[in-house]
Length: 364
Ligand code: SF4
Ligand code: SF4
Image (tube, rainbow, N blue to C red; front, side, top):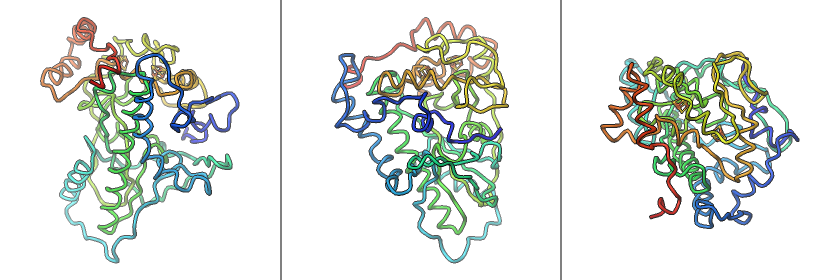
């Protein structure tokens, strides 16, 4: 059941002739961007989106031409400076956990949780983008815990999905995730413990975030968090530090998804199932053997390729995609988790929460 990262849709677009990225990646080099007449795809929008990715790409791909590694995406980060000769003695794991969480929030995470490393979620192999080789991934067994970081994306940008402008929400999210995870890993290293910073590489982030008590799984195949809905990225730090773990939470997402089909109805390529959870994925780009809603990554990526940017309509239209700094949205999420969920679903449609904001409106 563990997943070989060679099969994720982005890596397949490099080795699998059936998954043609066309100009998708090239558009992230501003020399090759192709403006469109539709709002959200002009020179300003691509300049902004591509800048949002700049640091993540420059740091993560600094050795790509020699070793084929995209740190943060195919391999974990290797930026840590060595720690001290002696390890801090931890006698109170509750206090250590509290301090690690406080540091995580100060480094840019919007929420943080801790879980034990479940080997089912660790990739069997890394993928080398230079020579197309897969390499067995042996995450040291000593790294028993994962600190999972939730990085909220810009809520207003998410209302412009899909657009090149909206793609900046993803780029900004990864930049913050890179800083939070690498800085947290260095903090733990400085205390004398092992720490490895990771974004999408090394392990499946969503089941780890669920185990760490940070959210539930939605029909659109994304994590839904109680603080930021599905509009998040996830980073993680693997460590041998003795920390207290969190436990999964339930706030009614599964029951709500059972009556809601907004993501499936709105997906332009019908990549999201209207049906029941299944343990057989539609193709090799998803995990097999876990009964869940699974999107069709081939259909989804093809749509991204056609637009030259990521889509995320399913995030924009999800009734959980709200600004939870507002009290009425915090109240709404509680009602959505109660027997009044059908009323909340109706209200979401009545108030047109999922409507797209035009890019020029965002710029104003
Ligand atoms: S990102 Fe777009 S294409 Fe992909 S599943 Fe979501 S709505 Fe469908
Ligand atoms: S749009 Fe509706 S069905 Fe889809 S994940 Fe969100 S709540 Fe669930």
